[in-house]
Length: 192
Image (cartoon, rainbow, N blue to C red; front, side, top):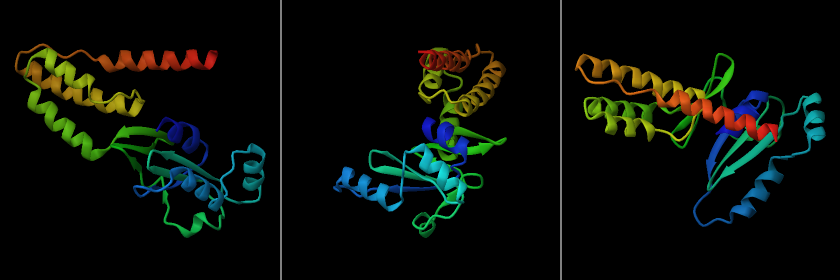
């Protein structure tokens, strides 16, 4: 998700198609076939030349049996033959998360259906012991994307409001500290 949102969508790869490779197929063979069919190149100069000529660049990203084809606007013989969506109008949904454009920037968030289920569970257990509610919030998502953290914090605010009304202690906001640590770790990786 990180790679798609912050390395590609950020740089104009706004068109996408998500597909699943059928069970039992040779994944390495499929990789080669798709890369050659969509003229996927990792050469920076080739991508720049294609962009100057008004042609679309396509990137292929595979996760297990799922793959995403990301493309830039422009003419592309093979990419124009398949149904693609524009991330500016239709969020990219993948594995209970979505990538959408908010305020001109890519944002990774928990998908709407999953967030509704999480909210329902959170309100059911809101008046339980602090330890169990805290454990629930810690287990919602392992990711610290700003959009995900914002969703969890908004839910935590509503749960804490309900807990205050009932005279119970509030649940501490653990995601702000986790997000800060994650950002610090990323900075350390880039400094090396």
